[in-house]
Image (cartoon, rainbow, N blue to C red; front, side):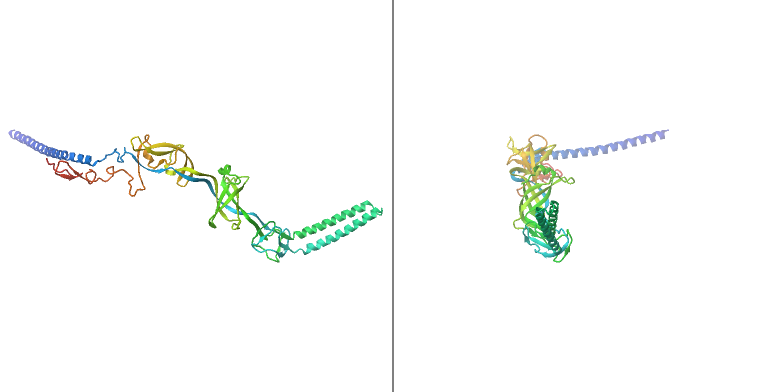
Length: 440
């Protein structure tokens, strides 16, 4: 009994001793940590005035200052409203066509007896070009003329006999009718002979003939083309939205791929009476002079139709426009009340567009300074302050100044890599490194 009590007492004493030892070790680590924290706090307190002084000495601007931070003036790029000469026009492609052009074809079959022209020759109206063999037609003409002569003699004799009452008036009438038939036969023979000849219908230039002397051709066969190139037409199509703006006499400018560097002036001659239902376009025909004969039918042409010319139109870069619903907004840079620059929102009305530029009809004047980049930071608030970025200056900054967010810190600025010196202290330590021992 006494031995058991002794063992229990020893176990309690051991447990108590172990717990006390553990408590002592725990309190020792906490005391060491508190002492280290106190030393660190002292060192940090000693170094803090130096850093604050350094920042104040260098004029560091934190976020929200005017050095380009989120709350400072917005950096923008600008351009001036300029005066340009704008032409409201439309581009199209077309084909040249001779003022007059036909392909000569015979009305009857026959053998070619004479060719009275050369390929590419200039001919006159009424000039004989092709003669078919008309031997048979000439014989028929002589026969008809002979029959007409007999009928004329018979009529004359019957009239003399009727005057003496030897024949009736009916016989005279029959002889007169016979004469008329004979005369008609003569006219028919003459017409057949004339159809064996082909004349130039107008002044022009012949093409390359498709037949040769002695060829037998059927009626309707192609012989040669002839075209009047004193002036030429250009046919082109424009969308139906231009129909109300087209009128005869309107100016048209032509350029030809086959004649680079040359421009031809033309006038609208006529508009087609009906629009093309498939492409919703209208056929336009314009006439261009061709005094030197350099233009030929079938040539490809690029047509530029000028509807209106504005010599003093106001224009800005396209990127200056900010669409807001059905409106167009620009930001004007003007002088602010505190001597800085502010951006004023202004609604404008736009006109025609050219590559990279847009016309301003209302809402701006010549010389106004317009923001062309950086408008996203100007959408909040009224008349926000701005800072103009000059891109023409070599190496000009596009963002905030030194000391702003993301900028490299110089010596004494407290930025990354800078050395912070403590005023009144003999020691210095790199910024962001472990604190050095503070000296009284």
